[in-house]
Length: 313
Image (cartoon, rainbow, N blue to C red; front, side, top):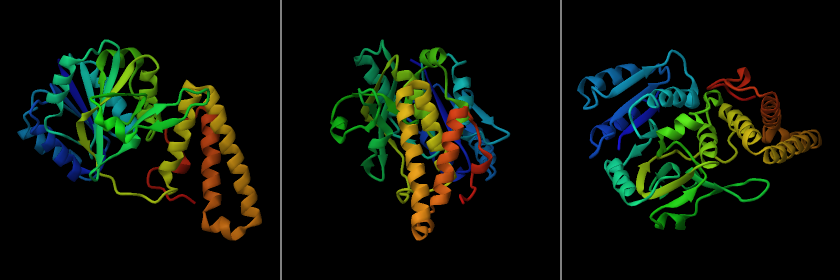
């Protein structure tokens, strides 16, 4: 069984260096390694060049230096399109801040020997965030007309494996033939929900299982709830686009709720101007409006109003 690994990086050279060191020291290394540098401007290219000179992957690595930042979705799209050309069976995906256990591929191969995977499209791992299992990375879809995303339960992780419908790209490994059949990452999402949409696409036809014994460390700095930034637009827009494509009734339900919420917020802004300023309602309402508009018009890619790093007003 042959495995390719795809790592996407942008302006996090210190973390990338540690991740590459992690891959260098694995007990069973991937057969091919693809690193996509998303037009970083922090010296990432120099880090990659220095690593390549000493890397055990020298003859099996491909470094793709993009000329513009295509976002996570564009980066994974490029990496996966390269991976499906290779003579491999499975393709691993992770970011530059995800640290797989050193024996993760060794354990994966041993698991595969003992379990039938004839209808399995993908597997995923436990995600450990600051010492705790991060449940939001593995989810199921409710078996209802209007779909709901439900995070995996902590008790699931005491099992040898359990079924999921949705995963993040932190510690996911996808069957190459499934990638060829169903396609790779939706490149024009830019960031957020690209991995959810991809796993939703896969789970409609194939099984996806989480193997808790396989672990990836992915420490995140907690952010306050309801934080509003440029990324928030892509989260809302892409979620709408995803459900519009796969579950139109759920899309209509989300759209209705968002529109009603937008209407209520506008009324609140008029009635209570102080609350309007406190909660930054104008900016929130504007973001909701453009997310709704973009989903209805199928507008993908970067939105000029919500460029990376731009302050939301």
